[in-house]
Every structure is written in C-alpha cells, then in structure tokens.
Amino acid sequence: MEIALVKTAAPKPKPDPATLGFGRVFTDHMFVWDYTQEKGWHDPRIVPYGPLELNPACAVFHYGQAVFEGMKAYRGPDGKILLFRPEQNMARLNRSNARMSIPQFDEELALRAIKELVSLERDWIPTAPGTALYIRPFIIATDNVLGVRPSNTYKFMVILSPVGAYYEEGLNPVSIYVEPHFVRSVRGGTGFAKAAGNYAGSLLAQRNAQAKGHAQVLWLDGIEQKYVEEVGAMNVFFNLGGELITPDLGDSILPGVTRDSILQLLRSWGIPTVERRLAVEEVFQAHDRGELVEAFGCGTAAVVSPIGRLEYRERIIEIGGGKIGALTQKLYHTLTGIQSGVLPDPFGWVVEVES
Ligand SMILES: *Cc1c(COP(=O)(O)O)cnc(C)c1O
Image (cartoon, rainbow, N blue to C red; front, side):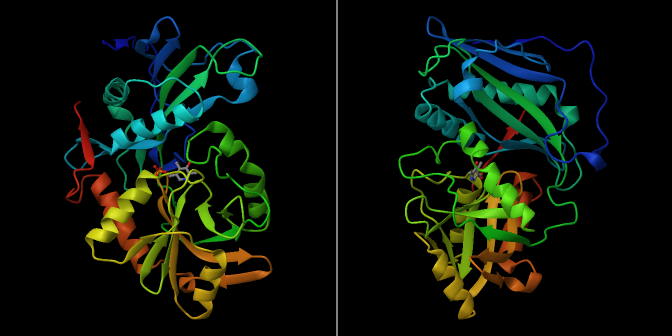
C-alpha cells in the first residue's frame, strides 16, 4: 500500500538545540491512518502537522480507548539515521491494541510509515550527545457515540519531537518514594499495555512524591503491595551483592525494550541476572547487610536513571553514596553508544532509515 504525502507549504524554523527539553516541539509533518469496519486500516498518509477536529462525543475523550508507543531516531556519526529495535515497539503496540479492543494493524506498513516520516524530517534530528528525535505513535478511538463499547473507527497517528539530553547536568542519582498506598496496575489489568489511562491514574502518586522532594515513585504490586514493579514509567533493576534482579513480567508490568536489551547486555557480559519477584523488604535488608550495590530505572526516554535514595514508610536509605553505580554507568554508555551508532551493534538491534 502506498503512503500518500502532502508536504507543508510553511516549514517551521528549527528550535535552538540547547533549549529542547522533552516533547515540547514538533516537526512539520505527521502520519495519519484511519480505521473503519468497512475498510479496515486505510488511507495511510503523511500530512502537514496540525490540529485535529474531533466531535465532543468522540469516544477517546470519555472512556480513554487509546494506546501509544515511544521510540527514538538517532543521527549516527556518519550521518546515518538509526532506529533502535523498532519492530519491538510495533509488536507491543499491537499487544496493547488487543488488550484495549482496538483492531490489529499491519506492523510492516506502520514501520515503513515511521521510516518515511523520519526520513522526510531528517533535518529535525538533533546531533548533540544525548539528543534524539522522539517518535510518538498513538491510536485513538473516534466513534462519536457515548455508549460504553469498543469504537468502530480509529485514528493511528505518528508525531515527532526533537528532544534534548534527558539529564541536562549529566547522569545524576535521584531520590525515589516507594508508594505505600496507590498502585499502578493489578493482575488482570492493563499494566502491560501502553494504554493512555494507566498514566492518568499514576499522576497523583507522582505529584505527591514530588511534593515530598522525590523525583519519582517506586510502584509495588497491586495485590500484596510488597513486591517492587516499576519506577515511574520505567522498569527497574537492583544490584544485590553483584546479582542483577528485575521483576519478572506478568500482566501488571510493561515489558520494556530497554529492560530486555539490558538483560541481554548483562548476560553477554557474564553478569548474574535474574527475573523474579523482589520484595521491597528484601531490598532494605540487602541494604542493611551492605549488599545493595546499585539500583536504576530504565526506559526509552532516559535510557537508564540511577536511583540514589529510597524512602519507604518512615525509612530512608542511600544507595551508592550519591554516585552512579559502575554497571549503571556502563549500561548507559553501551546502550546509548549502540543506539547512536558510535559503538558496534553485536545484537543487530539498530535499523537504518534510508534518507
Ligand atoms: C514505556 C514504559 C517503559 C519502558 O519501555 P521501553 O520500551 O524501554 O521504553 C516501562 N514502564 C512503563 C510503565 C512504560 O510506559
């Protein structure tokens, strides 16, 4: 299927790379693909970036039938445009769709559309270290009916945003609040899907944690509220006595591409690595024995985010004496190096976009 192209008549000036921040500036074009029951997914097209006109009864506004993805395009040292394991994001988006009763789409066509859009917007890819072109695919329900039922029509869109280095002052360990009351997801829920509503529900706990001086929350499981699950919208790893532990995936944890890549890297380095349930108590006990070596969150936006401090019910512990753990640092260096084409790619993760 051909992807139609309508170019903008009024390209925008490129932003100052020093003041990019995250997700505030958008490029000149976007991808749009429509779904109806009669035609399936049809009319894929790249058009000038701009507002949508939606009926106030539009389903997505009322019951939140919406999913999204997050990925990045990098400019390699030789000028090549690189994506990181993008087929994983397309597969996950379809898994999110399945959970949210949104029809499956052709992953190959979606990936081709993303490549064509990124190629068209290549001059928007920032080049400074730590910067990238963030790619946000998303799907919304568009029936104009207030009934609580799956929509019969959808829009699949992709927008692009040049983003600055996630850490303006470099990779600094942050303080994390172990959330004792609110939960992000539960067994049988939607936690494994990148469903828009999951994030709306997490904002209150995040805001409370920030008011207490923390950067993020550490989510515990929704049933016993004992086991660590994720940190903010990132997966989490703990180094306990030289063994790297991350919660095993169930339907309450988002299966991160960064998490999976880190597991593969650690295993290739011969580092003992386990995916299992990990009680927050066990983390605190390991700290008391002097065995909590390092901890970090991981995800596409930050890549890795070192945890320097944990607060849980009246207790505060420091991790790594305010410094970034050695493995955290090495993982950040290796992953960003592979993603931006400055290090070899032994796993075949990087996909080049023809420009
Ligand atoms: C997106 C996301 C992650 C990280 O996934 P990546 O594929 O590594 O970017 C982790 N947890 C949650 C809740 C997320 O939404």
